[in-house]
Image (cartoon, rainbow, N blue to C red; front, top):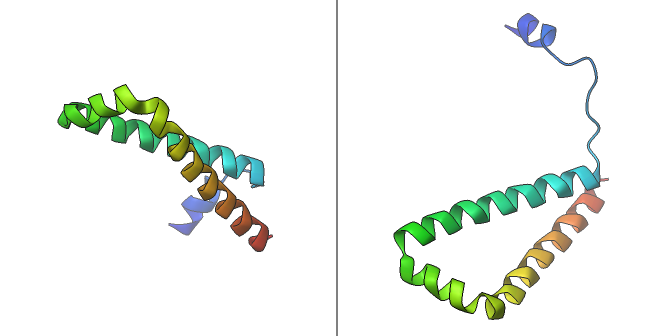
Length: 81
């Protein structure tokens, strides 16, 4: 089993960088938000309509939460290096 695993291993290993990690994190957050929005829009149309009508007022708060999460994640990355 280990022989098969090692035989199929890539010859070069991709180096993990902070920029690459942040890009992957951003893509994961966008994907999760998109899936949550699809569930909300299909199953709870009143909530979907509320966000559709008042998104301009709610968006800055959502953006602030994302930036706080990113800042915390960047501090964690700095502690790991």
